Length: 228
Image (cartoon, rainbow, N blue to C red; front, top):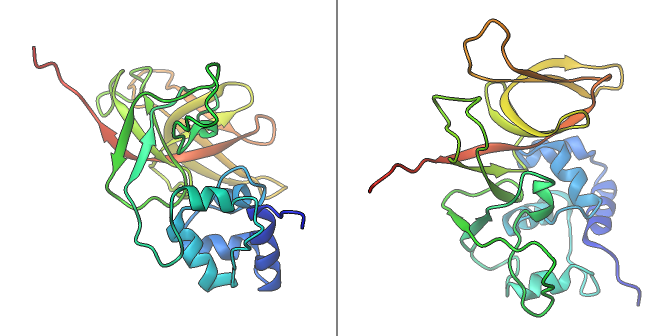
């Protein structure tokens, strides 16, 4: 029997429940983008979200599911207790591609990216998680170059949040989130601002003419001081 992807199963279960992606996102308190990424198989829900999807839209994990190996690899089921989450330290280029990456020696290829540093997360993420090393001082004094930030891709951005975004004209950037409404296609318009008190503040704007999207919200900040 031909396997069906987890995203296809989620999308079909949602439609059978007569719910939109926005409805599901609201029930789970996550972003619509996170639900869209599940349904297009770009990311896989956390196990707590899978359990909630079972209740909300009646999702049943098919034994022929292509993601079954993913679930079995972690020896988890809907009835298991959640396990500790580790956020991999990833590069700024395409960071969400490496979210929740673990080194699998069975499929390891020397040319592939494998993180050599992880951060254990004590809180329950809404989506996939990854860590970045701050590469500038644009958000000083709250953040300094070299600090580590941990991003939750499932959390919806709110005004004042520190977020990581991908903008076509700039690549992956970060800043303080300021929503500015929606365009004619109902896509969000927003700015990412820095903390520098200058005559020309540093601003990244996302709108119809300069498309982009939020990749995730910074949920934790870890700073290290010299001890030598």
